[in-house]
Image (cartoon, rainbow, N blue to C red; front, side, top):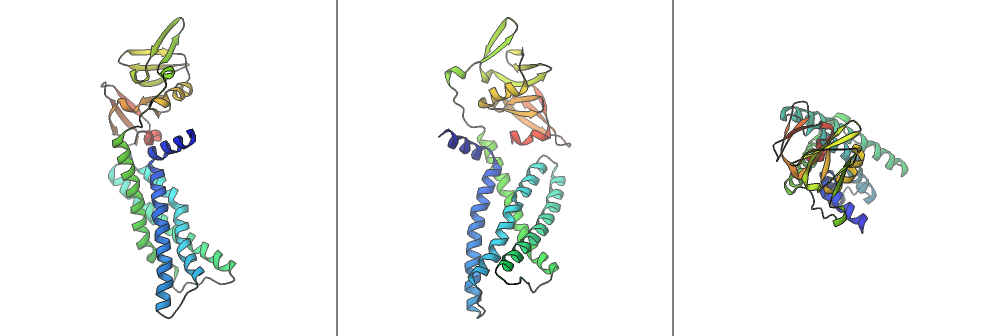
Length: 272
């Protein structure tokens, strides 16, 4: 049960999961419809095609896209914090590269499949003609994947983090500094940063210094909506008022308290 809950939370928190499942579902349906249509069309034209060949022709295209899907999602994440013109240019180059890779990978899979059946895969058109033919469809596929990813990310940002219901025993964070002990509720802490062998906890209470490691405090606070935004910095998502991305891809976070902290582009996806 706990494992299923974790998987459900991962699915609802990660737009890549939503995009992958959406693409797999619609892609599979599209493949089936195309294969059946190809068989019927060739039969109607008096040039029947073996059913297995139709399934190979359509299935290899779908399989090639599944292999390239992580590349498209990686580009979507990497280019998201960039200025619009840089992101657009990056996706144009990425789309061309992915389309070429899709065509070549699809052809390689077909050659292998036909060879296993004792036949030669010999398309009538030239490679250039095939690349241009596939490019028209690949552009639509690429844009569709990107659109689903951006929509999923937007919806997740609007709904915010999942509600957290910690047990009564876990509702307080114990902070010790020598003989002094302070008990803080997680929702009282806005952000945390590393300070040598200590960590600093910030909130309306001011700043508390605790002898903890960043890894240790991150593991303890992760259950309460805290995410890493920098190698040495955590923030409570519910405490964020707004973010502003710099040209470098790094970003500034304005908290509801008015404090402003910086985040690294490496961790940008944690608050998107």
